[in-house]
Image (cartoon, rainbow, N blue to C red; front, top):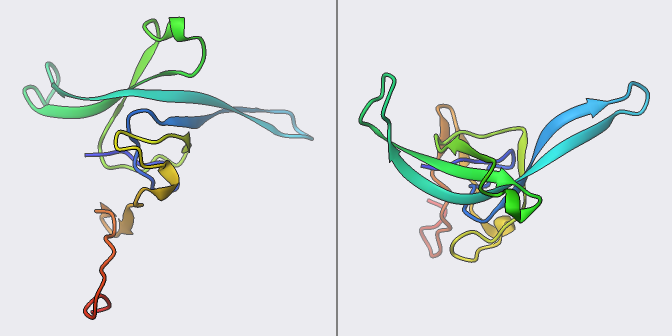
Length: 127
């Protein structure tokens, strides 16, 4: 499973993304953002609630500031194949060194997201 930013780009370990935080002013509106860094992607077994015993994949995040604070403040995002409209990847090469601009975007379908499009080459590519 994965998680996608507002441009339908999949989130990977090592990415830096920005989240809308708040706005100020009435005449000159200024928007403020928080920047987060994806530390790792893990699979855990749920230990409480209605989904006890089921495996769940999630991303561990931290603030993008002083490295000494990495162990103090951590956040998680559940990888549930959803698009987060308030999140935008701004930097990252992922685990296989593919820049985020070159990653395959997820396609929109009536039920949510489909697998990334694959490029077909050859005489039957358009069929």
